[in-house]
Amino acid sequence: MTLTKTTPSNARVLLDQLVSAQWSETDTKPSDDVAFEIFACQQVLKRYNLSTDEIMGGIVGGSDDGGIDGTYTFVGEQLLTEDAELFDEGFPIRTISQHVPIKLHVIQAKRTPSFTEATIDLASSSLNRLLNLELEVAELTKLYSPQVIEQFSLFRSALELLAVRYPDVAVEFTYATRGDTSGIHAKVHAKAEDLKKQLATVVTGAEGSVTLVGADELWQAASGNKGYTLQLTYQENATSGTSHVALVSLGDYVDFLKDEFGDLRRHIFDWNVRDYQGGVEVNKEIQSSLVDADAPDFWWLNNGVTIICSRVSIQGKTYTLDDVQIVNGLQTSYATFLALKDSSPDDQMLSRSLLVRILETNDETTRDRVIRATNKQTNIPVASLRATDEIQRKVEAFFEGHGWFYDRRKNYYRNIGKPLSRIIGIPFLAQSVMALGLSRPDDARARPSSLLKSDADYVQIFSDDTPLNVYLWAARAQKEVDGFLQSSEANTSAPERTNLRFHVAMLAAAKLVGSPVTEPRQLAVLADDSRALTDADLLSCLSQVRAVLAQRMASTDESMDKIAKGRGFVGEVLASLP
Image 1: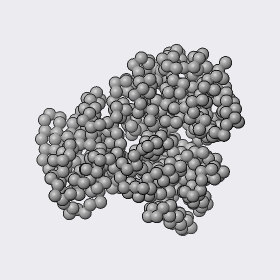
Image 2: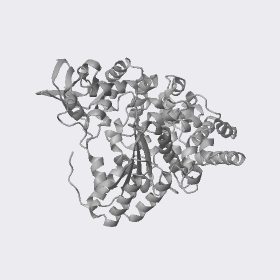
Image 3: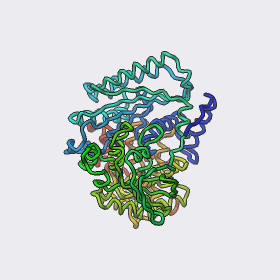
Image 4: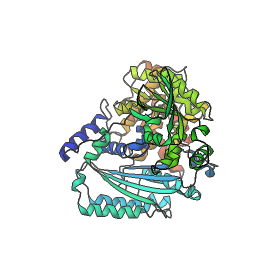
């Protein structure tokens, strides 16, 4: 989608409207600066199709941020989190492919109408320290906030763990403002070029880049249509009713997967049950068959891909597909794209064929059954199929009936324009229920992306025995806590907001119920009465949690982060109940 460049003042007006619209229908809107940081990170990282919770997880702006507002590390195609399997003791590093890409995105977002040298100088100084592996974390704590150190530690740790796989390292710094990129001073460009060279020295062979993004670029990125209507050229096909089977050349399939920038259209894999698995054996075999000139045609050796869409039309030998989702064949798609995206037009591999199944349906139950059925043939953890569970569909329907949107299909509601303040992701709901309904805020804090991997945890969090209104109450209550902790009345630091949010929520629920909550069903009495958490409730709970934390920190050498992730602290907080 091509958009005409607007005048600088008009671009700022449009941009400000977009940022404001994201936080409509909420009483807990962040400050204008923070809202702009979140928005800028969303647009800069749009190609990765991250959820709002994932974006929020990388926001580090605030005091002692070193001129950095967002930090995100990707290994292969996956966003790295603190509870990623890579960091598990005994993780088999050999399963990661050699030359695996490790990319660090660093973002500075300022609402100013211009770009300055000082901003780049500050970021350069900080990155020089934060990316210096010889500097111990203890030395960095003197200068930077725990949030900044935590996010950069992910990149540093990944770099050290994967050194034996000779990773391809890239560091990209983006400086975003409400300014006009056509009027940037030459000195700012010169500083940007210096920083680019600096980032390329992180490790030998690293790639550094610096991008300056203004109001017009941010507006165009946000206004660009994701292109859920796509065209796919085929060689041969068969049709039965609303289902189709086709042989598609690998060249045409790679073109189908590319967006206007030549990147992979990650959003068309939102409903797939798992992410790209990198250098696992099956992907090595796929890539091997792609480069072997003597191998049989590709579709003889591969199960192909399954596409679900809401409408199919055919003209000539081209399908036009609406609301495209590839629900099976992600590994094949990624491996093919990575292997052939830069191929020359005369590469013989592009003429090989892939088997594509296309199913037209608007029925959600049918879609979910197809997703399950097409993925049962491979060894996928049960946790990967959670989003298609009946309980998940019930929660989604209940939320929507009350003006809230449960994002069991990642980014579905954001993509159709629902306000961020009303969207609840699966991980956020799981954390909320874990903290308020099971009194396990330590797990909610320490394992944000892996709560659903355990069957035992899952059945405790999501059960037909739990009234549906409990789920909505828990999610809204946690949002009330998060909003309060951002307020001037709470007067919290960034580390407190990160580490204490679930403990405050747990204590608030326990006080209202009259005892520690060990089953989500206990929250039904609060949900039935639509009992909201008042600022007075939360201020009292915050004071108690702070007092217990102070005692714990005085008697141990543990950091706030470590204490918040420990079970002992939970018991001490609950013991403070009257």
